[in-house]
Image (cartoon, rainbow, N blue to C red; front, side, top):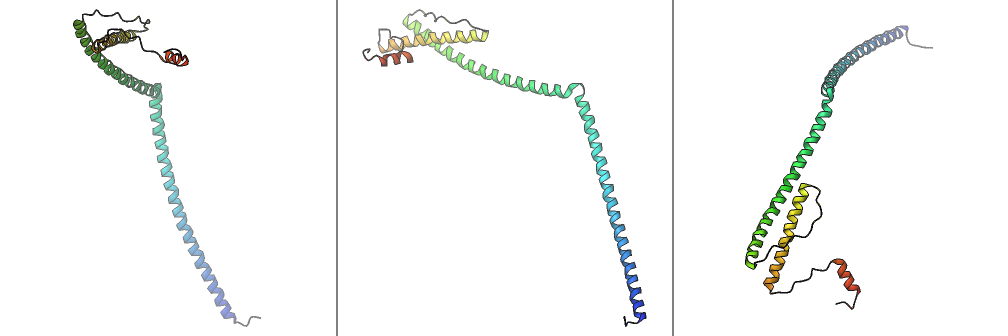
Amino acid sequence: MDKRRPETVRLDLDEVRRLARELASRRDSAYAEMQGEVEQMKASLRERAAAIAQRERRLAELEHRVGANGLAEELAAAQRAAAEAEAERRLAAAERDRLDEREQQIRAVEKELAALRIELGQKPTPPPARRPTASARQKELDAREAALDEREAALEAREAALRGDTMSMPSPLGFADGLAALTRPDAG
């Protein structure tokens, strides 16, 4: 049996009750404080969600306005067409530069050939027959190429005359002719 006095047991019981009440009040205040924080977080999340929803509505509205009447596709097609046109323009400029350079070279050679003709009293040799052309540009290129061939022939004649060669030289052998000559040991 308990030898304590009933007064001390009663005091201990009162002390336990007081401590239990104090603990319950602390717990209630901590719970209330946490509830306040949770409510603040919920309010903040609601505000953020509302802001996000508003941004999404604006974005959807913009997409609708841009997408209406196919403007987005038209813009993309226009950008592609502009890029292609710019590429074509650069290509044409490069071709024009190359043609200008060739034209200058052709003029210089033509002047030289004219001087040589006067000097040598030669008549111009007709250019070799060409294949039919498919376009005006091709015709122009073929005409320039024929003029170059003519000048090359005249330059070869000039070089031969400058070397003192009076005999005409046969045309150079091609790759197939060289192979054929190598396979025939008696030729040569």
